[in-house]
Length: 218
Image 1: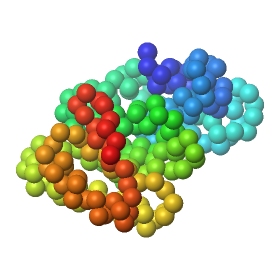
Image 2 (image 1 turned 90 degrees about the vertical axis):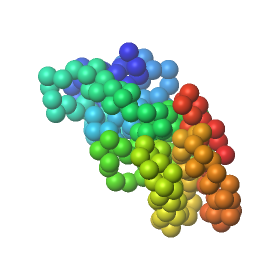
Image 3 (image 1 turned 30 degrees about the horizontal axis):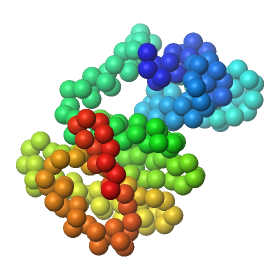
Image 4 (image 1 turned 90 degrees about the horizontal axis):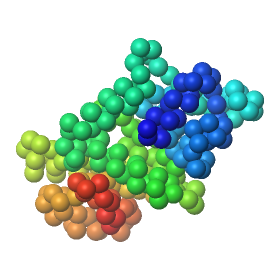
């Protein structure tokens, strides 16, 4: 059972809102950050509701997590399984897979996840919003690689990602910026060095995601 499934099962069994601290104990996570990151991701995927309210376990007024299920007959494993299947039938360089690998990598490197856009539903907003160990926010624009008209479409997608980063910078001058791309594709690899002038004017990190689910930071 994955940590996500553990969290959902506990929230389902509790039947009421509980805070991260109580969830850590109930799900037997090793640290609070695990519960926090998982619940933020589940919230933005619409599987739980995360609000400020009274915790049904410790009876303290805190940020709490509450299980949501629009289809009561559907099991937790089925809900998680649908997402895994959706990702599995897509190529590794699909945007949603690139995003998922980077989110897991960020969490493993001490980041808290605040927001993750639903790529399947094509939801609006920033693809990833994370907070590093120093408390500074990171906003990431994620792109996959197209299967049709690949070279031309990839250039359009990269342009769109760079425009997003420009708008992020205009919105907030203090956040860190990131661009996530699938590794090993010549179009992106050849264009990246030509962005150095832009990266000097508007610094951003490039996260290259490989088909082995590894991250190369540039």
